Length: 101
Image 1 (spheres, rainbow, N blue to C red):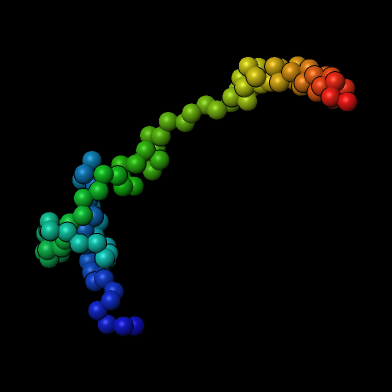
Image 2: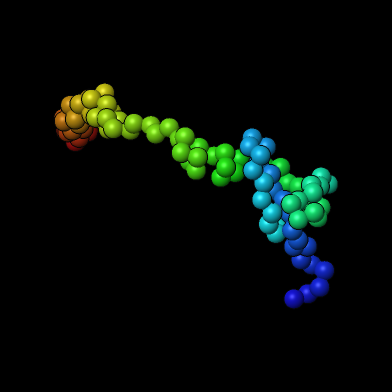
């Protein structure tokens, strides 16, 4: 590897702003803010809006949308029109072909 072309890879604390969940990991991200961690050392602090501690999917508070019946609604609204319109279009195109000949 060439020296001085890669970003520094060091310990960083990521903290969820919506919950007080924080974790220490290694990253290339930097920050001017710092936090004193459980081990007594000071690390750069990266604030996050959403983590696994606050995301609805991971917390079990996700609302499931009932998608059943969407196809039936579509077919009821548009399906019949398209089936009835298809034979009419064929008749019109045949009449145009005969008129053009």
